[in-house]
Length: 57
Image (cartoon, rainbow, N blue to C red; front, side):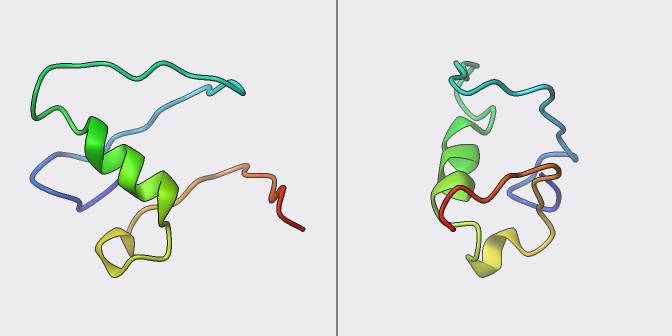
């Protein structure tokens, strides 16, 4: 994730089918959740998921 809130670029890897995301308040858990729910939101224009398999098609 890049240029979201006031945090530096963040890379999460490798992710599994089910993941547990935890951290201190203000660490970005909600931002990550919001991004995964609505990736087309203008706030996330600099963010991307690499290697994503589109399971909706």
